Amino acid sequence: MLHRALERGVVLFTLVAFFTALLVPAIAVQLAIVGIPAPLPAPVPSPVSAALPLPSPSPVPSAAPTPMPILRVGIQSGHLQACDVPDELSALRCAWGVSGNGWDEVVVNHQVALQVAGMLRPEGIEVDILPTTVPEEYRANLFVALHSDGYDGDRSLRGFKVARAEWSRQPAVDDALVRDLVTDYQTATGLPESRGTNTDNMTQYYAFDYAKYLHAISPSTPAAIIEMGLLTNDDDRELLTQHQERAARGIAKAVLDFLGRPSRTGL
Ligand SMILES: [Zn+2]
Image (spheres, rainbow, N blue to C red):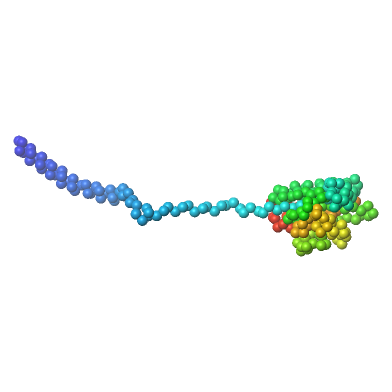
């Protein structure tokens, strides 16, 4: 019995071993056919790449826009603080300008100057509102003096006037500022330009006279003076007292146009 049982065991073991040898490779082939991925071997770092230094990250270019240059303009409020002038300007001491129908020029000039500054500052322009006494050798990207006219002898006279210094050392530059002021002020206000009537008080304006006065603009500062209308004329006075924002917009736009600055606020 024992011998036969051993024989059977040997035969059984032989059969199991035979079928196992057949089946295991077949199962491995089946697994490969259905796409079960075999585990990848771990990468071995190459000695060359391991020796190379890691590249440093290249700097990311900044997306911030190039800042615009800071521009400064001087808006002179004609006759402002007229009693506070130095001795070299004593001829102007307490000279408050013209008036018409109860409106004083010094008040109108200042109200318009404040509005011009209020329109230019949101445009990124630094504005100096200057009184009668200009800082010594005043330097800026431009200077505009604001005045109003009046003539009781003929109340039908009206219109605005713009001029630059007759001794300008940069006449083409100053003429460009004059042109911008004429164009933009006329467009904004609808007032007529009073041509051919510029007085010596404009072309020889004291604040332009750097040869004579210390309290004047520097020769390199582009400059003009505007007489914004006649307070003795009903139509001009209405514009300058009831619609000052139109006068201010014309002057502010001329400043931007002369400086080549596109408006941010729709001027
Ligand atoms: Zn004046």
